Amino acid sequence: MRYAICNLGLPMKAPSSILFIRNMVCDRCVRVVREELTKLGLDVRRVELGEAEIADSEMSINLDAIRRTLEENGFELIEDRKRKSIEAVKLAIVKLVHHRHDEKPLKLKLSAYITREVGQEYHGLSALFSSTEGVTIEQYYILQRIEKAKELLKYGELTLSEIAWQMGYSSVQHLSGQFRQVTGMTPSEFRKMGKAKRVGLDKVGA
Image 1 (cartoon, rainbow, N blue to C red):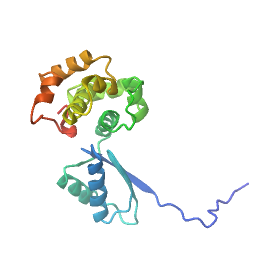
Image 2: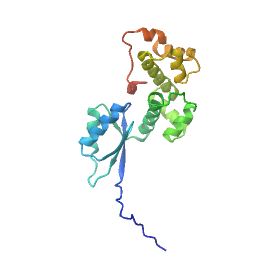
Image 3: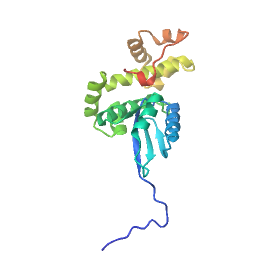
Image 4: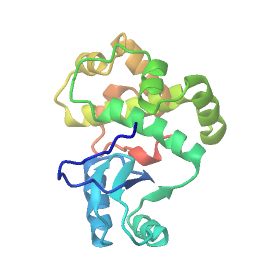
C-alpha cells in the first residue's frame, strides 16, 4: 500500500546549509556576521557563536564571496572536518566560561560537558585538540577561566572569594595559584594595575 504525503497547504521550508565560522566569541560577532551575510543577499535563518544557518537558493552559494567577506571582518570560514571539531570544543568552552547566564558553578565534569556539547567522544577530541593546538583541552579551559577572572577583577564588583565560587574553584587559593601561574602575578596585583592587560578570547591559547 502506498501513502501520499500532504502538506495541508502549509508552505514547505526550503533546505538550508550550516556555515562553520572561526573567531566568533561574542554577541557583537553574531550581529556582524548576520549583517554581512545579509548584505550578500543570503537568507540568514540563524546565527550563533561559531555557526550560521542560511537557506539554500536555486543558485549555488558563492563560498568565495562568503569567505572573503568573513575574512574582511576578522572571521574565517571553516571547511575542514577536524578544524570544525576543534572550533566546536573552543566554542563550547567559551560559552561555558563567558556566556553562562546562571552564576552558579557548573557541577558537570569538563569531559562530560564537552562530549555533550560537541557530540563526539572526548578521548578522540582531546588527542586531536592537543596535537593541533599545542595545549590540552584542560589547559585551554584554564586559560579561558583566567581571562574571565581578569574581567571580573577589572569590574571590581565581586570579592575574590565570590569570583572563585562563581567560577567553580574549590578555594581562593586554587584560583590565585592558577592565576599566578598563567599571568605571573596574583589577582590582587592584577586588580591594582591601572590598565589591566587582557587577551582577546579568540587569541587565548594561540
